[in-house]
Amino acid sequence: MIDGFRYSFIGTSDGSISIGLVYLTSLSFISWLVCYLLYKKGYKIKS
Image (cartoon, rainbow, N blue to C red; front, top):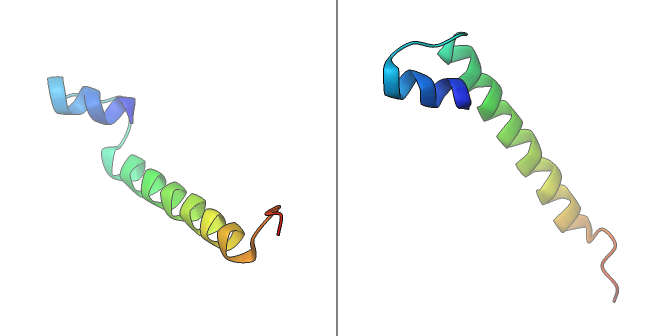
């Protein structure tokens, strides 16, 4: 994410922006999926 901000401000980056976007998107989706599954299961919710 820091490299993306750097690229947006000064136009240069250390790594590939497209690989960073794919990595962040997949990480966001995986974390959303884990949270969704835990919420659906009711993980450690007292009844």
